[in-house]
Image (cartoon, rainbow over all chains, first blue to last red; front, top):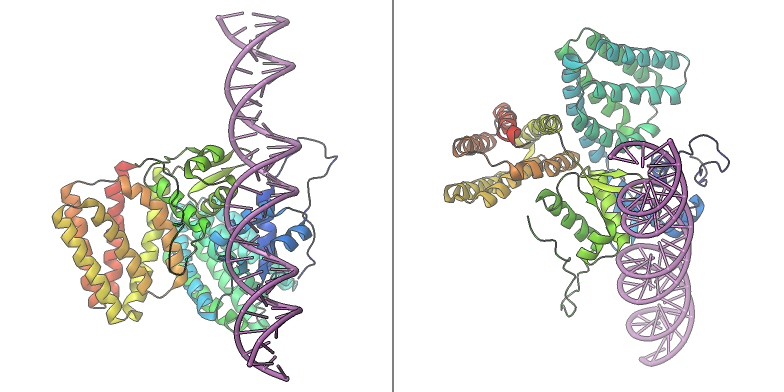
Length: 228
Length: 228
DNA sequence: CTTTTGTATTCTGTATGCAGCATTTTCTGT
DNA sequence: ACAGAAAATGCTGCATACAGAATACAAAAG
């Protein structure tokens, strides 16, 4: 929950090739973060004038970013009334996890078949780092690495469409997972599942990996169900 | 391949509750159709000034619609150069079909478990209508009903997220399927597969339905692979 | 004849302005 | 005092205007 701060514009006296990062992209990710991190809770009306002023941007690019997010499913467009941050019911979350499960099972299968050894090693590295963060009790970094690992496995599948769909759902769920702070024993269980995942991946055990990924998400539902 | 025509604005003297359909939605579907039907072939730059004039709309709502479609994956945003209609490689199409297959298998499973008898009857009705069109040799209507049936089955699953993801992929593939005109024997095979699908659904045979849907999409790849 | 550089044009990116709808507040009649 | 209507306010939706970047073209140099 941060303060709403103006967007960082590119430094005026910056040297080097003045890499003009498109405002559109910046705005989109900024708004996305604001929604995920709870600065804009579900149900909030996105007030164009006000929000634009806070971010230091005029209404036009802001509106374009909002339309983009609407297509992504993070906000809802109400005719003549602007945009509202979408609210997900418990069933919505469960449904999303069900689909995510199917997607990750597929990703696991494909990854075992097509991933390079180097790619698998990278995932292993992420995993080891995550375990370190877990042991250090660093929840935020653990959470981020956790997401990265799932994303990385999906990337290993080499299927762009799969990565797309997975990314959309992952984003929609980020907010939920962000608030879902499970207790120590569930947390330990989650880490253990991850350990199994990596082992299966390294052994290229298609069936096993698929199974663990599926189980992992079934449990994920139990871990977040009360937070919704 | 139609001419580019101005958007239909709502009739001036329309009676009844003047249902103000938002221009945004109209524009989005219009552009979507133009891309699917090939009026805007892959690689085409979406020229804001020109396109806006042809459609009778100013640049602002047009740009918003384009951003929306970009998020949907139909167009690509190139910084400082506007938007380009996305081009899908053969691998892209195959990847999309792979994911679609996983999603439809899931949908089939869920539909068998949760669909109402009335819902199944509706799908059956669509199917019968489709067979009629097939026998009449009406390709366009056959094609549309075909898509509707798949969408309907996904709807029966009662999983909104699943329907979303399926819809996005379905839309991206529409253009490919639109051009893919398979020969009579493959067409007949597709219809036969559909018949199996409906039968499995009516019998609520989870395994069978899942299997047929999967097989159907494997064959779909063979049917369109040459069109890509 | 080829290549390079300067200039002009075109298009995108952003800001602002105006009109219409929604909502809220205020006024009037009972 | 309360209900209904009318006015006023605020916001969205769309159009237009302006500034900066990219490209195309042309002229000049090698």
